[in-house]
Length: 159
Image (tube, rainbow, N blue to C red; front, side, top):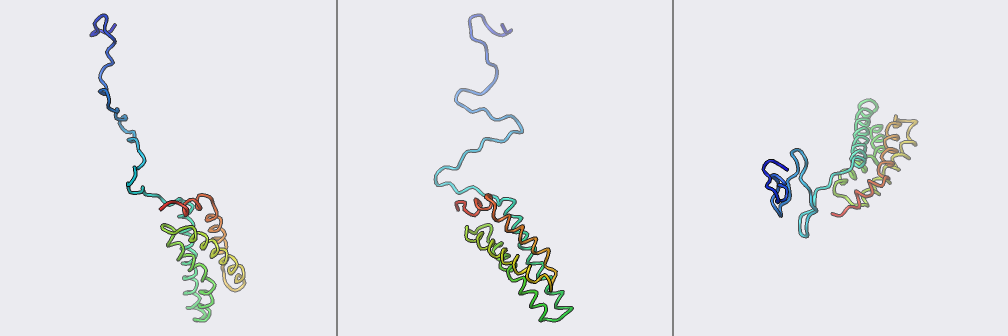
């Protein structure tokens, strides 16, 4: 028996929540989250890391060809710079697709995969004339990243 308990009465549960109320979680624990009801605005979705990585690599590849075209133009003239820019054309289109990764649909992903595949082909074809080896590797990585299930789920998500 506790000191304040009278004989014949049930034990005192002590201080606590009143009947019908949910207890608050202990300090430092997050509050429970409930799904939004009908008519509620959709919750924010965050772009998965593999999609963000593919996006950044497409920007890097396009930037590399801009840099390479400028450097070639300074050294060899505008015709050589135009050839380098033409080799990087698929990277420029891929960067355009990458701008749509946040809002684009499944066709954006498919277009980016096709464009990256074409960048692999043109990069391999022009390796004898220009140092495109790093961009070929980048394009292979982009194709692998965009072919993953997580990436497909991102582009098929409800909007």
